[in-house]
Image (cartoon, rainbow, N blue to C red; front, side, top):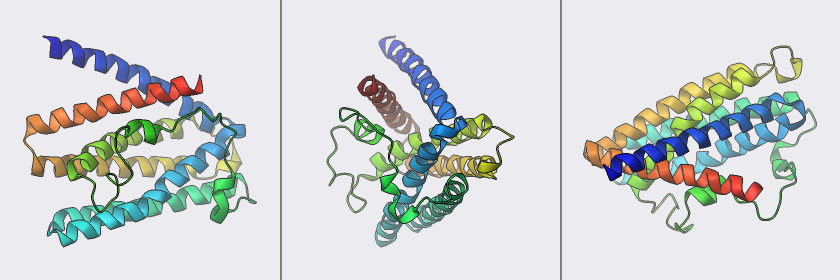
Amino acid sequence: MILDFMNFLTYLMYLASSGAVAYYSASQIRDSKTRLNMVRGLYLSESSSVKFLSTLSERANKEGDLWLAEKLKNHAKDENKHSKILAHALKQIDESIELDNIEQYKSNSKENEISLFSAYFDGYSREQLAPNCIDWNVFFASTYIMEFDASKDFVRMAKALPDNDPSIGNLKLGLLSIAEDEKSHAAYLYDAMMRKMTFPQVETFVEKWRVRKVKAIFKVIESVI
């Protein structure tokens, strides 16, 4: 009974946090004044994961898990494709933007604001999260949550884009394409967990990282406020 109650509270918090993220991302990408920074953040997120996933693929191959190695290799290819889609969108929004020095295009933020990544992985050291030594189940579950949520977030952002703005070109179609890939990534990550754990163990682990994601979002909101 207590567990069911806690799951219900988690679900309510999940709905609240998802709603906040959906509203924020949609409003940021809809507004031409904030669209550049929003797409820039998406670009950095997608492009920065390519090397990480490629290294994980090599590790899986060395460990003899050829199925996982291939899945991770394809995942890395998809992220590279996504970064190209978003890079093209950035150029359409602002022709003068320099992708090689894109870190300079940061919006002004308060020093006390924390990133979702740091809040999500609170308690884990940089070494523990390195691709050569990260616990596989931690990677599977944490990334599954992010990919599953991203598949929905990209659809919401695509639908939020105005239809009569020539500066965004095919960004809407690009975001929908990325959403489909994210859904596929979430599926293989869940399968990867099922190959190593029982169904109850997988559900427990996924719930753990769902709670982490919810708490991380509220921490970020609190820091911004």
